[in-house]
Amino acid sequence: MKYNEFEIISNFFNKYQKKEKNLIKGIGDDSALIKIPKNNILAISTDTLVEGTHFFQNIDPKNLAYKTIAVNLSDLAAMGALPKWVILSITMPKIDATWLKCFSNNFFRILNQYKITLIGGDTNCGPLSITLSVYGLIQGKKQLLRQNAKEGDLIYITGSLGDSAAGFFLLQRKKYFINIKIRNYLIQKHLNPIPRISEGIIIKNFANAAIDISDGLVSDLGHILEKSKCGANIDLNKLPISNYLINNFKKNNYFDWALYFGEDYELCFTVSKKNINKLNLAIKKRLIQCKHIGYITSKEKGFNLIKNNKKINFKKTGFNHFN
Ligand code: ADP
Ligand code: MG
Image (cartoon, rainbow, N blue to C red; front, side):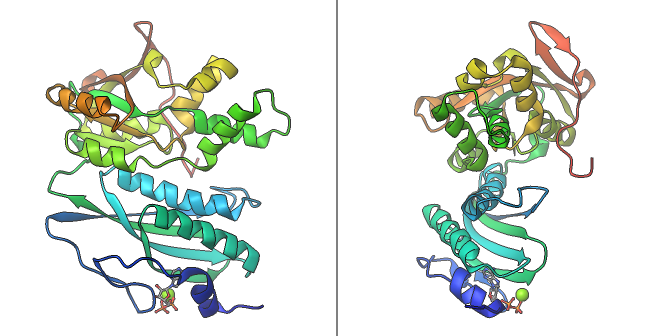
């Protein structure tokens, strides 16, 4: 069957989803209408994935659907927002019903799992590219901004760093040298990173600043430091590196991945000393798993990586699309 634009929308994207109470009008009009609940802030973000830049041409549409959602939800997580609605703009070179079915089935499966509603979009013909805009709610007035880190804050990372990079490199190799279970685990960490939504909402109450790690710790923590006009000391020996990496890869590789590769989608956040007990309580209740990696210092002291009490030389740039 050949589909036109409207048939694509009605067959693959205008699917039944459970009614959400703040949504006045979803797909099907000139714009969607949403009622923002009292005492909430609306958080909005968007990300584009382009074939050849963000994913390989032969990517499984299931994985593409996952990644599109995960990278966007991760941005909301870093603001302590609960994701509620999304807008999907999809540009495709041709209409491939099998591909679309696979993409859309997984797309809705994930949205429903997070109780997120697709409220609109745009459908075009051209080189494959997907833009998702996400809308979330932040309860109360507290805001988790990059600019709010303070000298003396402790710096934390959720989960672990570098697994996604390892997964990426394992995916590119036909032959592999490690246990298949570990290989699959690392590949999953690359293809299906879990956005730290609940963690973001928890830390919002007591953290000063946060960012999600999409471009590597050096680059992303660098954004916090720049916006907050601060420096930082990071202890390399404290970086959260999984045993899978420690036991199967070279030290140089996994430190490099943790610092520069990115795509871990973990949260990096800062907490002042007076709020550490609140964080420790959340850790104790198993609401969050995170590791202390260093301190925020004054801007004059700069950004330092420290190993065995010595500063080490390192490059200050992470991934950059125009490099
Ligand atoms: P308009 O011409 O007014 O922009 P469109 O024909 O592009 O309207 O879209 C019609 C409706 O379908 C709108 O509500 C739009 O948000 C929605 N829509 C279009 N493409 C998609 C898509 N890929 N996913 C979800 N909704 C879509
Ligand atoms: Mg349109």
